[in-house]
Length: 597
Image 1 (cartoon, rainbow, N blue to C red):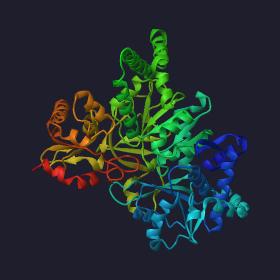
Image 2: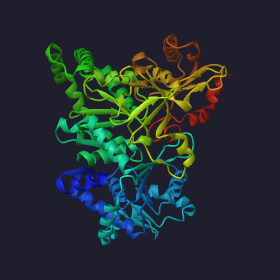
Image 3: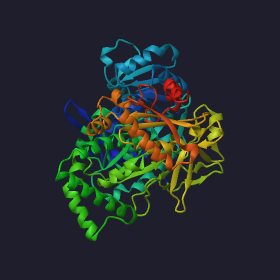
Image 4: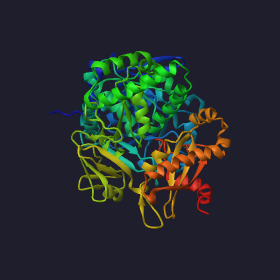
């Protein structure tokens, strides 16, 4: 069998479906396409430009920008030149930008605009290897001999077409294809090395699981989560190339709904925080519905839940339940989906962090089945998947092992995986590689358990396990998921390491809390609500109920409600919306200590 890398598939698309739209972006008020042939031509030009800058196989190039066509053109173009693209989160500080550029020794660094370029300016003295800075926008505003526009950079690559052909021909399956820098929740980010074989295999297996081809139609995704993350890369670049579907680029997270309505994606991937935001907004809207609409919604959601569970276990309902579902769909589900831009949705995915069962059940009752996925950068994104085939999804679990992947639970509960999607190791870090990759087994750092049917349930991160002063081990994530279900609460962090008892930091949901408070006659102002006696009593009542289902050592004895959320800006969330526990405990040390004095 011949070579079958992402680049080979990409070039086939350019030949076979060259006139079909591949990338959509918004210019002014109009959405404009870039077809597969143009996508390939620009990627080849980018590859030529790198060669013109003296790039040798294995040299790295960094990309710091929000999602846009230039991002993926540069990524694929770098791989064509046997270069290695490395994404940088646009929310990273100048010091973090400098670390990644310096660590991978990039000679060419790409930035979205003048604002991102300014980060480079403050650290350029630390980066003597950088020979060229390329800006997607604003290059004309900057007088710097190092800077050129993306268009000028592409133009410089046209003279190296033959060299690009030679580089493409020389690609080997086991060559390093890309670097994914981890979000660094516990220290400097590590560069996860993924090969061409890793990427091609994972895209094939994801295709086998999702099975979009058999569902038919003109498929599309909306690209809006950071492309520095492997999951977004898989959906926007590698799986899109493998299946030939189009990617629509949201202008920002705030413009996500506009992009969804325009693209009407068939495949939608979101991290739990995004699904939770949708959940809060929709629940508020539905709670405000008046009779008879409220009665229709209630009936439809009851049907939706029953039909959804039937679909998960046996396939789409028929008979009386199928008829009721068709009526509910006409009265409610289709209208809701149309407003969200999800009326063509075939597969909805949640990954990157645990999602609450209450959120899954809410969307199930609204006609949307969310398939929870589990994995990490070190195995190209997916380890397990809740398959869309009947009997292969189980709510509250992260699904079954990916085809071709072997998974087991170690004696200490750690999830181990082995297969063609497991990474090559950490860039320039043999010690960390040796700790994580042992005899071919990826040690995930996550604790979990398998049921009799092979469905995986995540208990917690190994590093998150709380050890109380009494020596008891407590997994905080299940407790936090229960706390987040309290009306008005958005986020939860359980505290208790080396403490006599557990406590919790809770944040108010800025969208759901005010409307919930208004219905109760409590203050809508978040600062006032956080300390309002009636709201505090409401939270305590629910914590008491949660505690009834917990072991004594797991119960929450005290809590503090914060008016503000944990965010990337405060340094308490990663770019993929995961809690940085160390940052939270440092920044909120005063509130934490108040619960233990």
